[in-house]
Amino acid sequence: MKKYKLKTKKTLSKKVKLTKSGKIVRSHQLRSGHLRRHKSKQALRRHQVPITVSGEAAKKLKRLLGQA
Image (cartoon, rainbow, N blue to C red; front, top):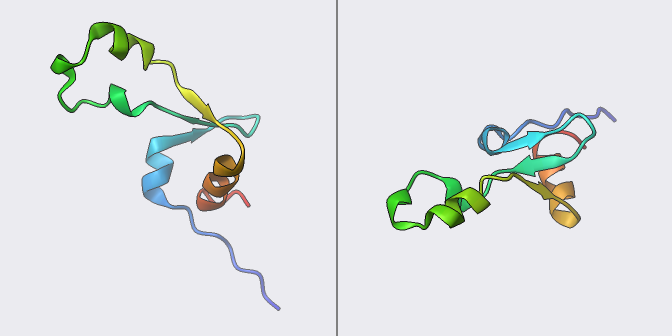
């Protein structure tokens, strides 16, 4: 039986970064540009740091990225 390649979900590949060690890093939603002036500067600074995704969510994201 022939194995098929997994296609990469392009929208996810733009939002998430896969590191060299295999971890998945994502940006925080609050940092996005919508209505930033109403958010506190402290909150915007706090959410500049990228978040590593772990556990079951990381497995699902890797599959969507074609890294099964």
